[in-house]
Length: 103
Length: 228
Image (cartoon, rainbow over all chains, first blue to last red; front, top):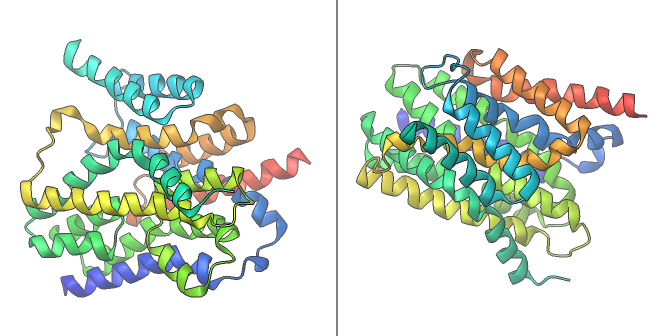
């Protein structure tokens, strides 16, 4: 039963990945839809970012002085000005570690 | 014009920094599956068959917690439904591929690979072998994810939990969208999505992950209308 559910979950996931690429003709999408699609990264990734920062392992909101907020602010500043992905991630992690280990 | 090899290399380099989150997350994902009492083969099978980070953990946690198979499968479907959006964006650049190639390449599309390849595609629309960039990003992510989950299954979660590497996940996605903070319309869309995700966090089947993008895209459509 578990195996069957893995396979069904896998097929569903694969269809999500494949449908728009292989089965749907792009001409079916109007110009307006295509213009809106340009916002997909900005419209999707904050749904991973915000809960990853503001909600803890137990599903409740963190305190406003949580080191993750500080780490995220540093990462945003470094990322914004450096345009460098590694610098963004490392600066966020290090500033987070400095607070939880040293302060 | 870039060669296929150059495009693959560019793709590999583009996703390489994201391994800071992908590898620890993969190790934890493999280790959690074993801790929950599933057989190693079964845990690893989720990496091959589902191949979708968070959705694999949610799936195994739900099953071990006594949820029905229906609920577990539905949750995976809901969490991964955002791929419909990625596919719709990528279809513009993959249009010319044969049907078989489209079927194959779809399997390796994941968040970070989509994000980095999409950025590259936007700037290099005229390159003839664009999809090789996606093979570079997706292939790297696939291999690293397989190795990371495998090592988590075999060795347990050997990354010390005190390091809080889970925090690397929001950080890699910050790195992806941070340059769009320069554009007010994107900032509005991002804040809409982020606040909606907190508001709907407790919605069933983890559906906040697709509800908030849909709300944000409606706001994006409104913003576009106002801009005219």
